[in-house]
Image (cartoon, rainbow, N blue to C red; front, side, top):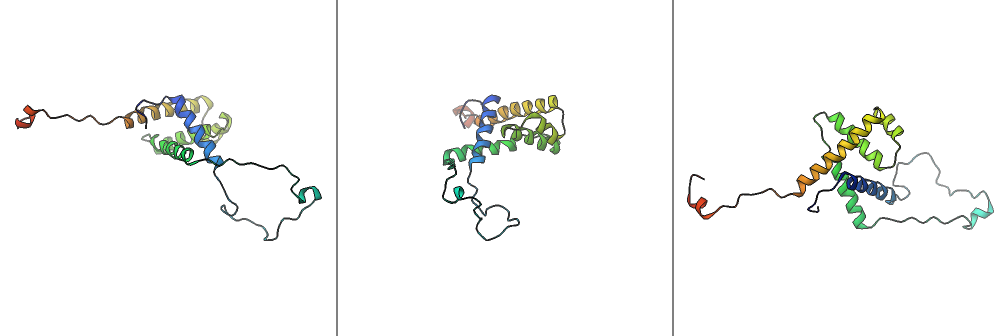
Length: 155
């Protein structure tokens, strides 16, 4: 962690980067739940699809540094806390849904809040994260003993 405090805008960018990295992670066939299907190969309906005449799709897989930054940002979600556990859960969900690119209307529908209240809680969560990360970045100050305090039993 850098020695300077991250601003709420920088934290927001890191969450957006983490959401994009998570979307780019490889998800090989068969890694998800198996549904109804067949073990037979797919039947080719048209000749133009038979020999690779469709557009090629290129997928950019994230590198190790991007994955590490994503994991760090996901760990930040745990720092959003509140005495009411339900409120902390909703605030985390708002922050992640916003980073994932959801519109405010969908976020409000998902968490059951009005737009202004959801926005205030999102802003407060980012400010809270900025402060919490600033506290984590600082080393605890220790009192350095002097020669006189070492010899003095009362200090």
